[in-house]
Length: 476
Ligand code: BG6
Image (tube, rainbow, N blue to C red; front, side):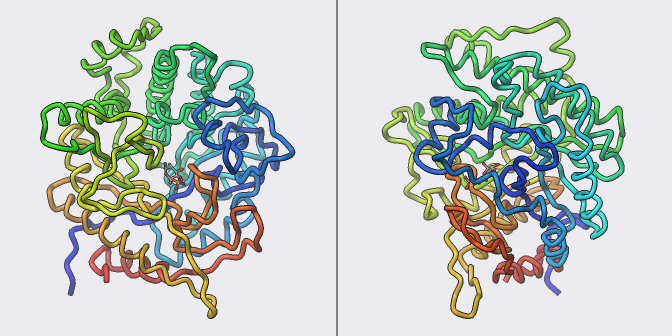
């Protein structure tokens, strides 16, 4: 009998996001969202970061979100495959523009509500708890063009109306909620993160932190509303995680790493502790940032989350000499290369011990249960002549990270569950590629959108099934 450090009732599963999986871009009354304007190819990064404005679609571009993996029509088949692996939790997001096509309507689109009711009911039919992100890198485009997206305080009202509709419509089906996916990505990829595009000469930091304030208010209010509607609702914040290591033990490098961590943790500091951290006072002053607030904002922010969720792909590295030229972006956040760890084909580090370090830091800081809601290896898969996908590299990555998570639990950290990223192959958020695959389930579709969309179980599918059945004891 193998022993496990994973508690009874630990939630095992996988994660996707609406815009990377659903497709059905203009079906069911859905409106156009920011993510639907991100092209595949060389302009994607400039559009994502808000440097190049592309508010309308072009005929000469390919938009991978428009069909994605057609989860919109195939979710029953996909949920059945997840149930076959033994999932007890499935993380997805609601496309805001399916419920509020323009974003500023007063009532939700009935077809959008019906779609998600059916999806969540399907999960429950298979004893799978839905874990639902309200906003995973999407804003209805109308809110961008008419209101300037999150730079405008009106967004707080639009978002809380949308959130309330979700809590009411899916009450009894969903109890685990996340407000904003990887909220700190707003700083690193402002358009995809928060619908922000910039004017020439603007103080970008001012715009970003003002938008952050609005998102933080909206998140706190949504948390309050969720609890009022059903006290059993559990709401989490969500960080693109991964600690910064100092490049050397030179004090200046250690200080640089601490500042980099604070830049990302700022959001969670507010959401989990209920107030702006004291270090922001000096930072805002030095960067010329003046947040416009209203009386009562401090009280709103006191509505803290129930748990802290995060994604972890790799640790990061910083030094006092870090700059645009010597750093590169793995998962959007700039980092120095760490010579002590290996990297994926896309240059993302592979550092399982970094996960244990990150989890310990986060629990020391917040003392709230953690939920690892994204982790995985993006890799190119090959279908062999027998039609099999032998993804041992993925198994090895996941095994080492699950072990590290088990160590963190043994360190004394309460962890609610684990949803590996992209449990079924989907569109890559950073590159728009299909060939950057994370799944246990292969989807026949290529970077240009060609393929049958047929689903095939990979070797990792059978491996993960064993992991779940043994509650994390059998990782071989
Ligand atoms: C996270 C996002 O940043 O990383 C996901 O929440 C994303 O949406 C995932 O897909 C992996 O990144 P990528 O760029 O490989 O898809």
